[in-house]
Structure formats: C-alpha cells, structure tokens
Image (cartoon, rainbow, N blue to C red; front, side):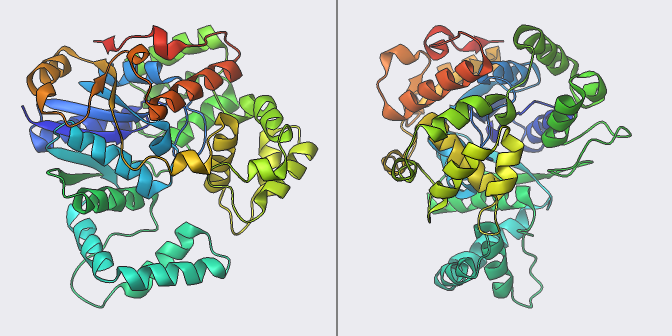
Length: 399
C-alpha cells in the first residue's frame, strides 16, 4: 500500500483541505492518506477552534484514512520543530510521500533552497543572529539573511516570505536532515492566501478568514460555501453543544489568572519566554480586560504576535523550558481515528512501525503524552464544560 502523509491543523476543515487531500491522493497514487494533526493548541500559539476529536471526524469524513496526534511539544513549536515532529512521525509510520500545500507550487525550488542553505549554514546562522540584534523578529532576520545568500543563477529558490513556503522548506529540511525515506511533493495553494479574509465569490477561503467570519458574525451562515457539508454539520452540532468556539478571547479570564498568579521569575521559566518580557506580560495583564487589548500592548518589533501567543500558550498549560528541552524526538504514535482502509494499513504495516502505537492512553506514562492530556483538560475547562479526562474516555474514532 502506498502511504502519503500530510501535516495539518484543520482549524477548521474546509474546501481547501479537501482539495489538498484529493490532489495528494491523485498525484502520489496513494492507497492511504495519513494526517498528523495538532491537538488542542496550535503552531501559531492559539487554542484550536474545536476539539481534536471533532477535527478528526471532519478529516475522516473527507478522505483521511488515519489521523495521528502531533504532540503538544511540536504542535506549539516554531516552524522548524513543528515540521520535525510531523516528519519523524510520518517516517515512523512508513510513509512514502509527504504532501504539503505551498504558495510556490513546485518542489524543485524547495530542494534548491535546502542545498543552498546547507552549503552556507554557518554564514546563514551568523547573519540571522546579527539581524535579530538589530531588532528584527526571527522570521524577518531569517528571510533577510536568506536573501543575501541568493546567487545570480538560473536556479529557482523558494520564496521564504510566504508562510506555507517557510513551513514547506522545513519539511524538506527535516526529510533530508534525518535521512528519511519520504519523498516530498507540494501542491499549489489556490484561491485564498494564508491570512486572507473570505471572498464570497470563491469556494475556498483560508482557515483564518473562516474563523474570523464566524467569530464576527456569531454564525456559520456566511461560511457555508467554504466548507464540505459534513464539516458544516459537525461545526453546527459543536456550536449547539458548546454555544461558542474556542479562542483566546474566550479563554482570557483563565489565561489572565494564570499570568497574575505568578512572579516574573516564575514566568521566565516557561518555554519561549525571554529577555525580560515577563515583566511586560504581568503589567499589561493587570491593565487589560480582554485578550485583544493585551496583545496590542505587549506586541513589539522584536516579538511577533505568534511568538507572544506561543509564550502565553505555555504559561497557560504550564509548559517550561526544561520540558521543552527534555525530548528530542517523538516517542509514540497517538491514534485519534481511522477509516476501514486505515485500519487495514495498520494491520498490514504495524510491525514495521518504529514507534509504538497508542490507541488508549491509560496504558502509557510517557511525559510527552501526559502533557497532551493536561492540555486537553485545560482546554475543556476554559470552554466551560465539565469534561475532564476526555483523553482517557474517547477511543480512536472509526469511520
């Protein structure tokens, strides 16, 4: 069986994701699509719009065969580590291909970029550090240093000013770095950019645009054309049950309490908190009654919105620098859901997997998994539902 992997958030699952799955299956002649999906907190440092089992259900209904959880330590990390976690899990699962969406739409520039940056890595890292010291954010410093390396040749390189291209580069980087057997392919993103608001003349919109529209209108009505029918039905059922979708604005009272109960010295222990920003975080949390106001006051030229949100995620979930540095690679495969085809793949290949498959968490004491369980409980608490211990209660979804 040919297995093609995708690394996803599905926040929420929309028509662009459906297109990606269909194209990935067609271009690789895949028998199985394996989605490695983030749990309850995401790469941009925010809570998932709906819980991971709801997103698993949407994925299975629209073409995924296996859904595997990307552990918290990678799901909430900067792009290079996010990619590392996903790639190593797909390698453990014996995937033949990794398919990712990009603005570039052609894999050759990514391979050229990898070769270029590997050949000049010392110079690249030196320039990144130099540009960060001038006040640029890390993404800005990386791109500036990268632009200086681009030679005047006939080769084409990836445009690393684009968010999906950046992630795509890191997928290729980790595929090569860890000497995997995975072949990368990329699919052109169509109709909507990463952060664009919805355009009612189209059928594909970014997940960011869809979330913003739902939150602003307090309704799913205006986004129906951008979602598969099954996803729309699933989101409608969620809203009927919870009355709202997850966001930092909704979670703010809990996050604010998490900040204000700590001293600056304690906050400095949390992952990604650096250079004295802990003092600003505490002071601004005292002043602001809503999340958006807080973020606009804390944000600076040095710290991007995403970087600050990741800090706040770690404060909220009690995830420290020590925990971040305690794990080098994924240590298990957490199964969230499977189709009949996915179940057949598990039966056929499971003995070849290089990591243990966990379908029920009660049998495991892995510290990486315990952090996911902890994150789930806090996510559910902030949603206002008395649903503690859901990881122990919900078996893998079968579709």
